Image 1 (cartoon, rainbow, N blue to C red):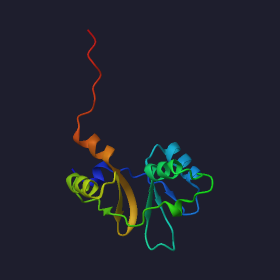
Image 2 (image 1 turned 120 degrees about the horizontal axis):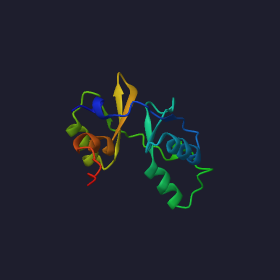
Image 3 (image 1 turned 90 degrees about the vertical axis):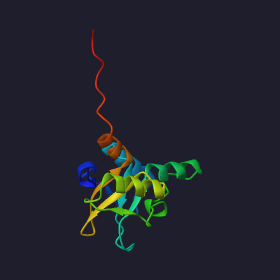
Image 4 (image 1 turned 60 degrees about the horizontal axis):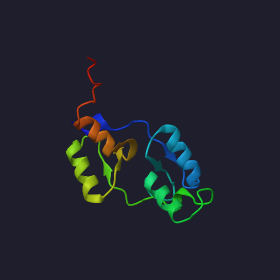
Length: 131
């Protein structure tokens, strides 16, 4: 199975000036754990994850003041839609992260998460039989 089969094609994109509260609200509304940060001055997309927001709040920083730019990972490992899920899982395990931005022709076309991979690899949970 390939990344294109597992990835979410609804990509939440935000700007570097969004506050962490704004980013968290958008992520919560879309039910995603990461946002692609598009900063025209950065040279490519970055990623802001729920863990980045949690770490900031845990340090006592205000989510109303802190901006996405200060917490965005710009040194991102990107996946291609043609990668196998094994390649994506290996990249995540090696890098210690749970999300990969999927690029096609240098454009974000999706995000694949550990949860997406697990959904593909594990059989769907079936309701218990009623006796």
